[in-house]
Image 1 (tube, protein in one colour):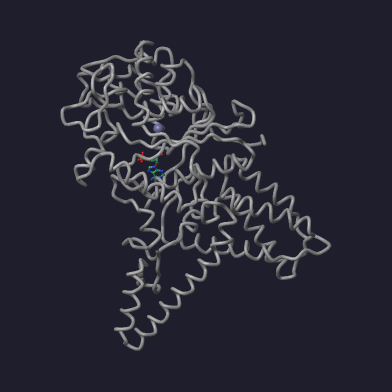
Image 2 (cartoon, rainbow, N blue to C red; image 1 turned 90 degrees about the horizontal axis):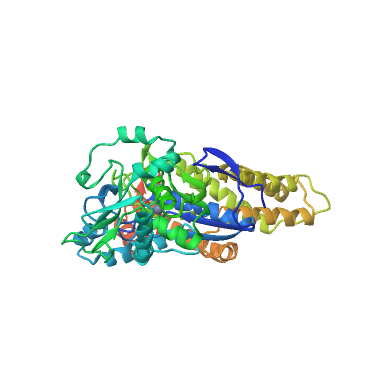
Length: 494
Ligand code: AMP
Ligand code: ZN
């Protein structure tokens, strides 16, 4: 179980994974801020941690996986001043802030299900843990690392830095960080330029507010993760993850808060996923270059040539290591779609392989190579390459060019099923390989039927029978299919 190595952002080294409790692993991942739809960049981070969670489970660890929902206390521009993201959206959509939270939480879950990610063990919300956050802030004040001004509580970064070093996660010194910081709004209330809010006093128009020892207000963004991770995983736990963009502020402040409260370093292994980019620009809500997963599945986006199945997109993500940037392009997705189809075709062939009395390929070596790839900081692209080697063996045996014994065939099946379905999560539907097999036949039939109808539509168009071609298109669209005419022909999605 214990050959797993993890790149630790804090030490900037690949380290052997030693859990606090033998056979168990505690994993906390910063979840979405549910004031709008998640884009594909957010999905990359959650899918990467799904892979990590799945592999820990596959190795036999008993994992407690906590991924929070930020549904309060997140201001525009991730600052201590400004409009609340939920209240702003609520005004815009004429809904209650909690309706916004509900709407986008449900949407997030739907997307996660489509990508076949396993649900976390606990999914705590910030608004459901206001009490825990207040208690933690009280403790930080009592320990001398925070102060109150006009109902807002700030963390005293310079005071903390005397005893603990601020900025270790990004290997920065306080002086350098100070130099790089501009004077910001609310500065008159803060003692130091880098101080950040633990609790923010409500204004008269604030919709989401709670009573506290410092009056009505709401928590700062960072405190929720410190409060919820320590509640469910302990004051020090094994793995904390999130996107790389959270390293410099959110996670740096989480470490500071937890140390100021408990005098302990909260996390043994910090893991950060790299960004999904579009033409080398980070995909983000603010940059306006975000693809929604639904747009990708249907192809209904100006930059897309066609739609892609969720499993082809998941496979696309698995072909790049989680610590490398992943650039989004039609070509890359099309290549992944083909690769995914080849792998799944081999999985189907595997079902019907017949054993003989000898084996020509080394199946044990293949299995070891799969483990080795994942043990080396969850290297999914190398695993995928090994699984293609597995596919080659499958096809070769099927073509009669190689042979395999019954024992080796069982091992090949175990290895391929385990790594393709359980670890990479390419099963298609939650519930694993069995539901994959049950549904795959139906999906294939549906695909063939739609292709047939689109073929008939094309023939109608060719003979200039536009009434029939339009009727086919309109009826398919009425059933919820999205038909897209691109330069390489017609494509469709659901
Ligand atoms: P948010 O909902 O903005 O708090 O983000 C949720 C998660 O998505 C965080 O862990 C972010 O680091 C991550 N994230 C945001 N943008 C990207 C991106 N372009 N690529 C990968 N992860 C991202
Ligand atoms: Zn967080």
